[in-house]
Amino acid sequence: MLQKLAGHHARKRFGQNFLNDPHWIGRIVDSIDPKPGDCLIEIGPGQAALTREVIAKSGHETAVEIDRDLAAWLRGLFEPGQLDLIEADALKLDWQAVCPGRKLRIFGNLPYNISSPILFALIAVSPRVADQHFMLQREVVDRMVSPPGNRTYGRLSAMLQRYYRMHKLFDVPPGAFTPAPKVTSSVVRMIPLPRDPGAVSDEVYAEVVAASFSMRRKTLRNALGKLLSADEIRAAGVAPEARAETLSVGAFEALARALVEKRRSLAV
Image (cartoon, rainbow, N blue to C red; front, side, top):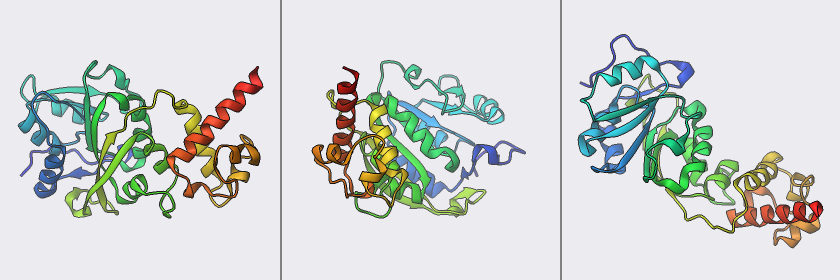
């Protein structure tokens, strides 16, 4: 039986669902494959289901926990030198200051209510990341890995696939958690892609993707009308009659580059 914090109940405001099934804990930790010397960062260790097993294999991890009661409990659970605990909101954390100069291996059971914002926040540090393993709502993982043209392909897909190669590993049933969520979860592996030094800024790319999907059923001619004309879209190698869900990351990159060039010419 896993040792738990007596009297602590999952807090809805933190989106807490605690993993407690040894089978699924083992499968997730095996997928992470922690090793001594790795800079392992866990988001939301909760009641330490993954934390115990990762530390048993690696000897040490850093964890980010927002719940002050769990943070205090976790500090007393491990031997000195096994756990570095950052009591903070992962969305507000300066990720560049975590394990400076080292490659990060980030993992965790992300709260369903803030999973997408956390994934977007981590993009900024992706050049320093070796890999990421997250458990998320299955529908979110399906969107993350969806190819263009699939009905689940959307803003999340186009944003994350610019920065990561992703693999859906397996599903985890609701009964593996306390309290049991109403949805099935999935585990995803994210491997950062090499950054193109000539690529447009993250901000402009995100702006074009957001605008393209702002009117999902509309063509790019309508969705991007405030940013690019039909002729400018066509000059970027993209059909103005196309819809956002059919575009590859490369197509969004071309549109973003066209927007940068347009703004540069207007500024002259």
